[in-house]
Amino acid sequence: MFPYFIMLIFCGIPLFFMELSFGQFASQGCLGVWRISPMFKGVGYGMMVVSTYIGIYYNVVICIAFYYFFSSMTPVLPWAYCNNPWNTPDCAGVLDASNITNGSRNPALPGNLSHVLNHSLQRTSPSEEYWRLYVLKLSDDIGNFGEVRLPLLGCLGVSWVVVFLCLIRGVKSSGKVVYFTATFPYVVLTILFVRGVTLEGAFTGIMYYVTPQWDKILEAKVWGDAASQIFYSLGCAWGGLITMASYNKFHNNCYRDSVIISITNCATSVYAGFVIFSILGFMANHLGVDVSRVADHGPGLAFVAYPEALTLLPISPLWSLLFFFMLILLGLGTQFCLLETLVTAIVDEVGNEWILQKKTYVTLGVAVAGFLLGIPLTSQAGIYWLLLMDNYAASFSLVVISCIMCVSIMYIYGHRNYFQDIQMMLGFPPPLFFQICWRFVSPAIIFFILIFTVIQYQPITYNHYQYPGWAVAIGFLMALSSVICIPLYALVQLCRTEGDTLLQRLKNATKPSRDWGPALLEHRTGRYAPTIPPSPEDGLEVQPLHPDKAQIPMVGSNGSSRLQDSRI
Image (spheres, rainbow, N blue to C red):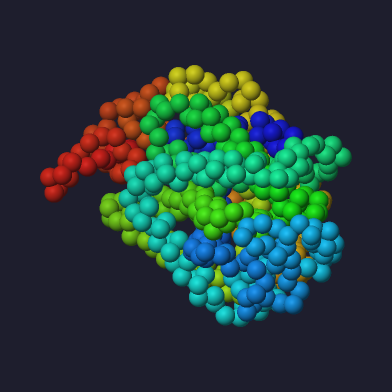
């Protein structure tokens, strides 16, 4: 937790503010904002690649949550006992061993139960077998795809349909939906928290959660994990923050927003930790084992350990429905942002009138492509590929993208120019703390995290399965595919830029485009003010911006009032 807060203060909040101010100032998505320095537009393409990878596998996680949500609509949870056709002789359910009848445990068995459960290496829980043998029908190798799990495929279709319908009118529709998806999980968390802390053994789990292990503070992996968690939870370097901020009003106080959202986000993570560990403490007390042996990571916590804990609660189907409904809502909120990032980047990049009018079809096309690309992840080897993408496609590449973004804005475009832009937009320059973090602290921390991540690299595993070399190679290629966009686009831009010498080409490729600056003419003041009022005879191109970002009402050909703005 200590490294987590350090990373929040010196990396999370500053980078969050930088991306919000970047997108809001230009009113452009993750590609359009790089008019600030066209040579670095590859950073925007890298963000799009990262968002594409995450969008593909993240919806598969949502679809599994949908599957568990539907499976919870029964009087008895299907992973509560070992009497199902998919269970093996090694299955040893807590409820089976306890001979629970009418909701009470036989008091004569706790010693035997503890003895059985202490041999946990030989025991497989019914929730684990349900996850591995029934939900996934897990194959023995990442290359053995087996069959597509039709129930998961159906749930994947449901999740993509829900995402598309919520984004059918862009941020106008998703903004209203997010009022629910962002707030209702707090209700569920609070219900689960109240229930969790009233359980026997909950205090043990909470103490395990809040008690520091100071020997871990010297491990670079802990700091790397803290940084990764900050990047993931705040959404830095995905392009989503820039995209969503581009829909803000020009003078919106994004500094206040960034501080409030970052702190609220991380406080929610800490609060959720109390919810999780109160339940895990209860489960550890019930099993007679240490909390560290109950807790799992990755999909194991959400779909094995926690579902098993839910079976121990009275009216367990109700708590299961609430828990997985919360997971679905949290996942959908992230998925909205990822899909909107891709759609906005495509629409802003093409920028003609047809695509502005047909944005719904672009959204549909991206959703269909995401569904088709997610089908292999619903096969029997799907979980291997999902974890491979999670570990490589969006890990150190996020750190590299953030570092290059900081350097390009602060040192290529110039920190004084950027501070003046923020002052013009907000009415005050960024506080001194943020200026120091943007210029020195954040890039240095990011760079050292990247170095330590490389030094302490360990090949990916899933439980006891070791990924083959060719699969790890694919993982590295996915990671490089987003980062390689940056130098490749820089080379292309250098070749296309005018100049007699390489140095002259470099200067021309890195200086801001003529159309860099606020999108609306009314906001182009100071050094962005046009020296000569534009006229139709000048032959200047007037290109419509995203309709959702518009603020000037115009009347369309059908007589209906619509919103649109233009840029020169």
